[in-house]
Amino acid sequence: MSKITINSGKGKLILKKSRRLVGLKSKKKKDFKKSSFVKEEVFHNIGGFNVVTLDRKRSSLDNKLDEVRKKRDVDSGTHVYHVEGSKKPLVPTGEIYILFQEGTNKEEQLMVLDEFKLEMVERRDKNLIIASVTKKSANPLKVAQAMEAISLVKSAEPDLDTYVDEYDLIEPNDALLSHQWHLKNDGVLVDSNHRITKGADAKVLDAWNRLGNMGSNKVVVAVIDNGFDLTHPDLKNKVHKPFDLWNQSNNIEQGNPTFTHGTPCATVAVAASNGEGIVGVAPNAKFMPISGTSFSLRATEQMFDYAIDNGADIISCSWGSTNPSFTLSPLKEAAIAKAASKGRKGKGCIILYAVGNDDLDYVSFYAAHPDVIAVAATTSKDRHATYSNRGREVTICAPSNGDWPITAGRAWWDDGVSIYSGQFKWWIDGVNRGDQYKHFGGTSSACPLVAGVCALILSANPDLTAAEVKDILMTTADKIGSPSEYSNGHSLKFGYGRVNADRAVAEALRRKDGVLGNPEVETPVAKGRGLFQFNVTKQENKGFGVQIGAFAEYGNVLIQAEKLQKQFNEKIIVSINELDGKTVYKIVVGAMTRKADARTLHSKMKSAGVNGFIRNLKDLL
Image 1 (cartoon, helix red, strand yellow):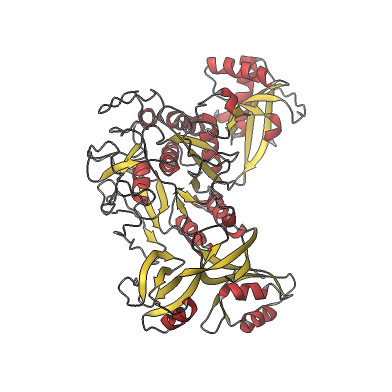
Image 2 (tube, rainbow, N blue to C red):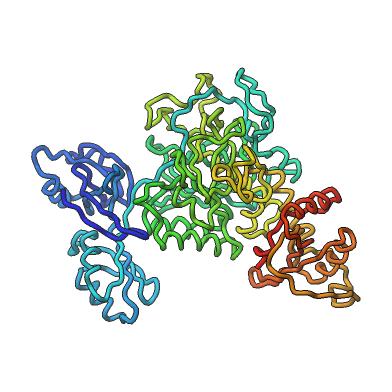
């Protein structure tokens, strides 16, 4: 079988043409299930194409595809490819990302497009162009390969799409849960003799009590996935600016039995508190469904741009890939980074990805992005879920199945049959707890749980940046498992620990009320009036102390420094930084050589009612 080598992401892909699959695009955006020339529709939408097998009898695949391309209802057809060693179908979308060499001018670039019969789609900058094949063009993979040989072209990457892995519960093998133990775990299951571990939960009910509510309706949680049941009683009254990438409209496709994953994911995060069924972690938050997971460059950019442009605060993604052939390209990395920095009017969208359910020592390539909160899974016994991927990129973990599953919403068309095992999977113990609900799990469930916690954090303090929300999650998490699992506070299995919604909300409130932008500055000091004794000495960037916060008002720095020095008789270190164009002062108490001494001071300060966290001074710069 012929092979072709192309650029993809940060490396090369060696592709083989599929022996049986092709992609067809309809002129009327309909499927081909009833077409006489189609034997079977295998995937409904990959890169805008329906992936099918053809009824070709004795014809070769090439000849049959050429014949089908001439059919009245067929807009275009393409071969489907596989990476060596993988069964995943890769479909060329028809677009090519062309990076020209420095110094080439527009006329030279357009000349290259004309040579290959390409059509300009978008100019990104002076050297980067997105072009599309036309009826007169050759196969986009061959075009991209040929362009690599031209001296004017630095690189040419054809846009490919495939399905991404949904990190769903694959084969539940434990007894069923009737109550939402992940919100508050009392160690008892009402309808089962199975024992779970008291306290192995996300402390969500405690967070609601601290807030005095169940979150703000001004917070928008976007869930990017497939299979959203927008008629579900826990979702139907909270849908906000939906979008379907596959049909490019606000009319989200429903009823396709292949796709049911988005409904349980969304309900874990934001299911409404309506007196029936379940309740999500942030039931008052708005729900923005973005339907159509995709590997495509164009779709990746579009899904994140849509979230930015339409006011998403949080973006939850329970899908990705751990296949080394499908690493993120710089353009995809840039799309995620853009949302993390430009969203929320410059505060940044909080982006979460599931680490994956492959029992590997590395996480999904999407979850590994530095701006992402990478979520692993733990069990109802506060243990690592064995399927949950591990790695230094894991940010945090959250309760899911592995001992006892989560209860989540179910799409009305979900037939309850696992595509992996063929086993009935609505309710593990066979006890029906409602036709609109089912058992769920995997890192697919852990990820939207943490997304809901992020919504509670923003409900407490909407001025926090995305980076600050991530920091709050890490510094307030509960260390579970053996202490030997952790190095510098981080575990390859658990990240910085199991999410604690109550402590996270408390820290968000603390930063709002008494730390960042403290409004309680004494008036004379705020106006530059007051008398203080200074003894300024430059501090080396080594050692440890206890950071009590960051202040936007210099007057607060003076007041707090005076109080802290009197109270604890330690050095007061002030780090001057810039955040979002504003000067911010970080105050650290103490400058100890040993971290153990900083821990002692931290305990002393905590006993005195002063909250803070241990800080390595070199990290302040």
